[in-house]
Image (cartoon, rainbow, N blue to C red; front, top):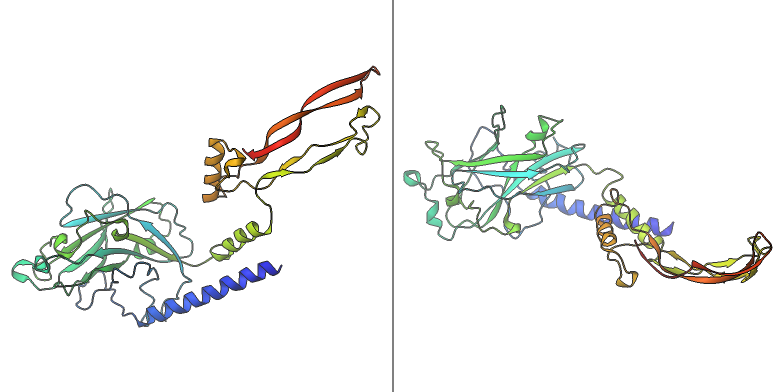
Length: 351
């Protein structure tokens, strides 16, 4: 009981501190999300490259915090799938597998793309209109009869000498307009247009070149939702309780067998008792080598550690047994001395 209370208050206190920290940061951040059909000037909504794990929703600001309830920080991050072949100079597509995303309680979604600092800032010149901030436009991808939908338009400034930053696009409309979205993949398309004339701009000249990016520099998709009572810290507390409560790792334990107490002493002469031993304990990952796991047991244990709900754990069972000799009276009242195999556990393992 005391262990349960300790973990509960520890995680509750940590959660409160985390929420206060994020609220203080987002309360100071300016809101630069623009409407889908306009292109405004101003500082670009983004984050410096060093701010790698800033996953809190960008829309939790002073201006809209009164109109939209701030969710508890339940955040799911999806990595972009492999880049499409081709240069993608004028339009870039970003694909995400969201088959594991729980739509229930979803409160927001964002696409974040890193705009890298250019080695030569003058490459950002846009011809005769150089120096004029271009517009970035994010669409959904065309699919079958479904036409692409404009999700957001925003302007870029500080083209000369800008530092690397994450450009943030609000993609909540994708889910807001279709609650029963069944697509296993999301696809977004990015393009840049001159503010004057509307000509397409080479995305490489704006810092969006994709080849050679590390995993930390690739675009990612964030989904924000409410925490359920049985999720997040609650599950972690339960898991830790199970680990600390209880059973040790798989090993051999004593099991004393008394034939007299079993009522078998009327036909068993000797021995009237012996140590049979038995196997007990958990087979968790990584399995110790002395438990002599099979290849199948290793794979099953690894799968269980990643998803306990779908894969059961392996079992702690005898791996080597030895015989004992028993003197007894058979059904014809003959005295028989016989060796019985597999009566004593010599070692245990995970199977």
